[in-house]
Amino acid sequence: MKKLQHGVSIGINRIDREFFLTLKATGKLTHEDYKIISPMIDSALEGVDEAHIKVFIDASEFEGWELRAAWDDFKLGLKHGREFTKVAIVGNKQWQKQITKIAGWFVAGDVRSFDNEMAGLEWLKE
Image (cartoon, rainbow, N blue to C red; front, side, top):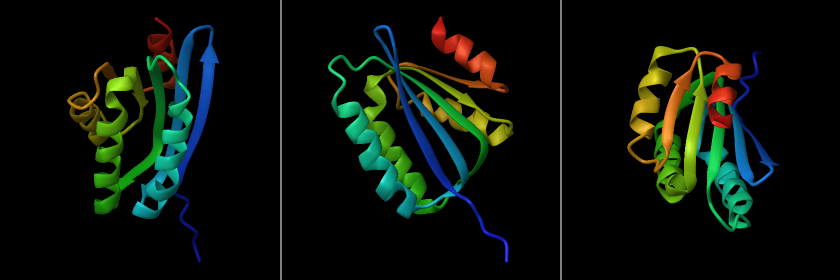
């Protein structure tokens, strides 16, 4: 029997005065995943006095969302989108590039798609 891995790894980094949130999405996310993910992100961002956050998302192993999880992701974006100054999404699928355009509607900062990790990280550091 094949086990399907899915979920999100979350990292928090601070370099000088800049705050970085790193996410790695794997597999197809579910509503149950967001029950765990959302409070973790809320808690991580709660302690940030000046919310000027750069986000790095590794979506290279991401396969999408279940319908209810897509709604959960949308709500999370609405809740925190104004806090993000830059969002770099690294992925290798065409639909991920389209999602990047849609995400830009709900995020106050700039959202861009990259084919490789180094290009995304370099852009965030600019």
